[in-house]
Image (cartoon, rainbow, N blue to C red; front, side, top):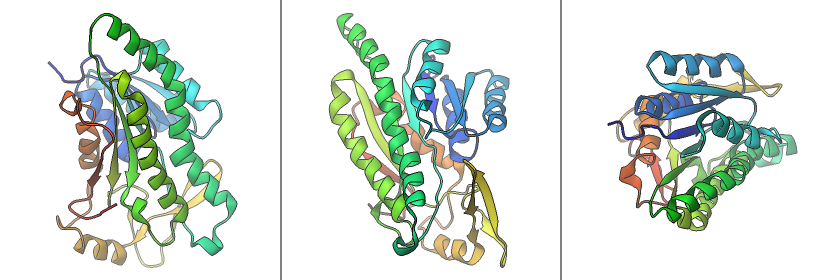
Length: 276
């Protein structure tokens, strides 16, 4: 028996990178997945990938920062799979600058994506989760649900990332608060803080090379100079950056029955480095 057989998992930002690996990991263990991405093509590609592996998945395309996204995301899960068991608030990106040069647009864009969007999703999911938990309690059944919020080692402070660091620190406060509020509903709420993970946002650049990705009409610089990556790797006890699959493994731990008595916690997935 697969540990997540029949569970319904919602994963934001799951068309690429870590989110894609999380969606595939949960689906491989039996979860039915609502896949989300800004763009339709990668979202539907992951849905097809899951289906080809014998799993079940549907796509909910769009920006997590849209005012109607949270309700639409939750509705997609309920209309297709009749419930919610797992929510992974993963979607995110960085838009860096030092404080004196950071615009309000930069600040709010990152806050809206990393902090406001998870808040709205959890708020929208509450009626569904609450009704299910009350019905299960009336039947004398104890059913655990899982919320996994994605934070970062940058939550401890990182030069040039006051917006991102503040949002990721805020996620920890949100995690601990919801864990206390929803414990009565048998919901485990935890966070995973990533260190250096290999994604398109952290891929190595050569020389003066510059790369951008388009996010909600903005061209955002991505990538890190190879020398900086090499230097970072030497400070990681395990000697290298993590893979998206390894990052997904940390999220998966908080989605399994083994975490049923763990809530309000944060685990650092950073190869031995990092502290918050």
